[in-house]
Image (cartoon, rainbow, N blue to C red; front, side):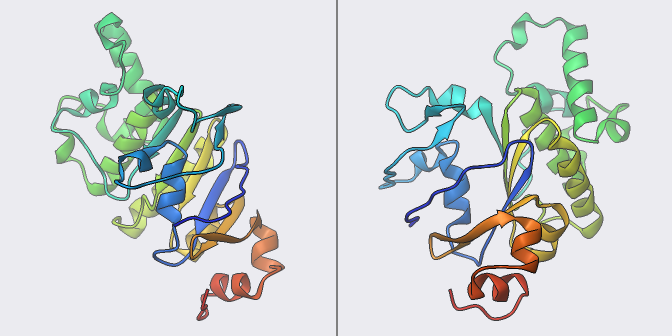
Length: 235
């Protein structure tokens, strides 16, 4: 349960949400693209504004919203299709594209996801043949292909090895130049490496939020200090 959430995401920054397990991080991030609508009994009161409009409005086109607000999940979720077909999967206007235009879309987004050099000679191979880290970057490329304005990532490196994790982190620092990033992590050191703006969530409430440097160096709340120093924190 989330309570009394007041949050403005910083545009073209990595907004990191941290907090202990069960604190509501995933629930919060899934509110931004209304994925919580699929949860039985879910109720949301108040307003969530994306591009100036309240996305909780009954008139909101949820399908359109989910192209504006892309999402990458904890574990890579590739389709039983080729690498190229996975990139193109979300494009509704695909039939209007020529073969050359499709290849351009694939190349553009695999490059943006820092994957093109590794797969350019195997675009017709099954996506399942890729490593876990490559699959996660393929999921990011698929998300980028629909031209979102915001990218939500729910602990996207939790199942990856250290090398793949660092590749995703480097990618976030590059993507924030063109996208607003919302990144959930349980890894404090990861938040220290990539966050611009930090949100500390516990028991469904935002305990403290602000620029990363301030929260790590000069937190206002004792709970924040303990959690970010990885000490025992009874939220």
